[in-house]
Length: 53
Image 1 (tube, one colour):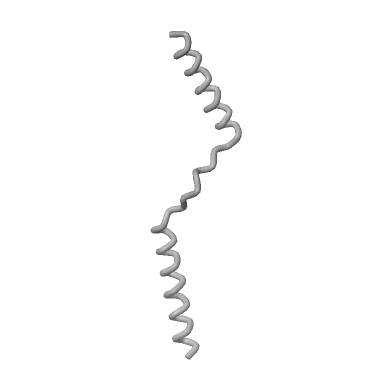
Image 2 (cartoon, rainbow, N blue to C red):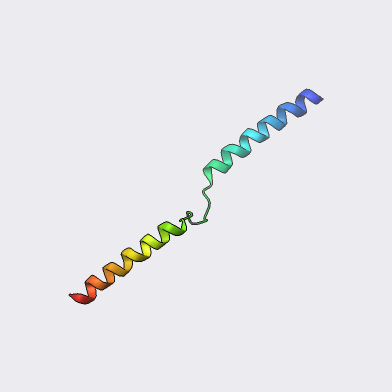
């Protein structure tokens, strides 16, 4: 009985890992504070260039 239980547990564990790799998270990728500041700066520069033209 214990051997069957252990085999089933390992099978379920492998199946769970495989399923988790298939389903991607809907969470947006983390962007650090420094990177956000750089992106904001680039956007402001682009806006200034378009307003000048």
